[in-house]
Image (cartoon, rainbow, N blue to C red; front, side, top):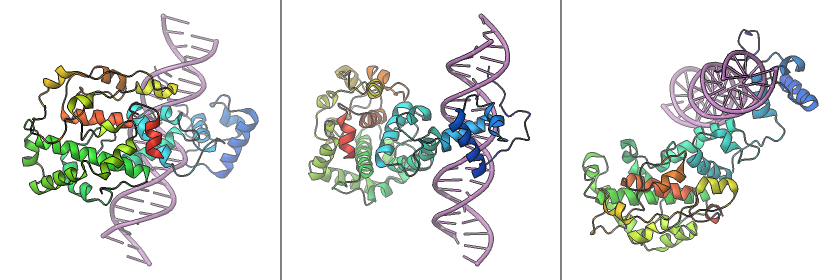
Length: 329
DNA sequence: AAAATAAGCAACCGCTCTTTG
DNA sequence: ACAAAGAGCGGTTGCTTATTT
């Protein structure tokens, strides 16, 4: 199937940036007659453009309900959340941001959000922690940034950043502490000194005001941090049927993630002497497209999966709709 | 001050999906 | 049921502006 581009054979048609005169013609025509058939529109409106170009110009720029200007923190958080569930479905994402176009959101993602997530150590495609060596090489830089302090900022984005950093460091430390994965300390630029610094700093945060602040920020989802919890406790929290409940405006189904057998059979079980808590429940590689299915299929996996699961839950509104609003307020 | 490089964004391209006859 | 037209989507390009060297 498919079809040839609407402009085929019409090499005379103008391309490139629109002039104010062209904009005026298009706006005045659409306001008078509606767009009707986009293919027929250019001729009727007196434009030397293809219909597709007219449609794009109208929907992305000239439409009266377009909201222009910087994205707010709330919009940014929403985009991240939606992207973690929907992936690059920009038009779907755009339906939840009134006045924003899919193109604008896509551009914003590619130029701003993606970069921020990368800096946080989050893979912007999978929303999983980055495990590539470049990230580990930059770990010290991440750790020494001014934001990584025992007190939390009021800036919502920085709150998220701090939480993500904290979780990343916690899980890295746990991975390093796990005998099943002894290679990291030996083969990456992350040296013993950095390792000790990480451990000391995380321990200093554990049980401090900072932790109270973090759990306070998380509201009803403090278990995402899980520092002072037993393994069974960390498994008991519910996960909302994220997308269905999000789109319908309800927080509905709660899944029971208890599964002691799968945990005990994991090759990555944390040794008893490990002072850090167990990672959250273990799941196989999860699907961005269908997070619900991925939750219900939870059986076993790796520490990296665990972290992603925790992150996904963080991004995915754990037990109530108030979670993200708490974070943002 | 000029050149080089990076970043941001509007617009285009080619494909798929939906509608229509 | 089928093919073509129409519309929409996501990825990419290339121009403009800002920043760095």
